[in-house]
Length: 241
Image (cartoon, rainbow, N blue to C red; front, top):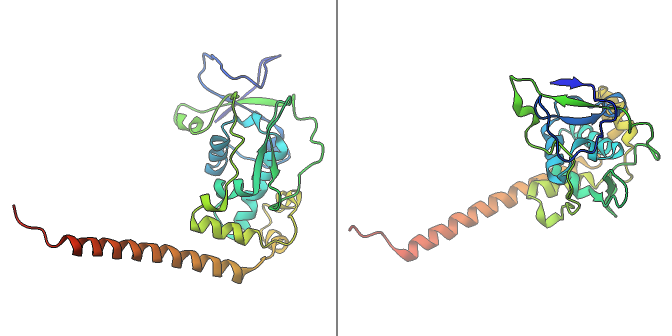
């Protein structure tokens, strides 16, 4: 990937662009200097942008901090970060007259604390990101430019999640107090410190929920097989034509 300086006076909130050098997206430098992001975006980050229907600079840096801390938390617990699970704990806030969309913890499901109460000094520091010719697919899978209608109704209800995702949500809900986004970011490359800070809210509880999820999936499979067998019995053997 290539990072390119922007022209003087070039706005970050473009919604449609014509560029002779091909497609690109803007990104704030604070994501790398303070939040520890890398390029290209991970599948989790790309899917999150797609689900929210917004460009990278359309999401406020504090909200990017939530996403980064959530991914680190999942890594420390040996879980794969899931956008559906993330959007069970966070919801997009209507920006109103503001430019940026922010994520807030869902009432009663606060998992992480705010990275910074007043996030300043990021607005004027951004650059373009282009892909190289060898792998143009690095720009696929999420909106590159600002969208007029970001998806603000993405809170995942428990009944909308898979059995395994519900188990993970129940496991993460075992934390008695919200975890510090700042502390998680600081411990990203210190696995021992990360595990010490996270602890295990209830390993037995997670194993129970995971085991129950597996049993339910197996039960559903057996039920489908039984229904199919009963149906075949009622229809009788096929007669040759």
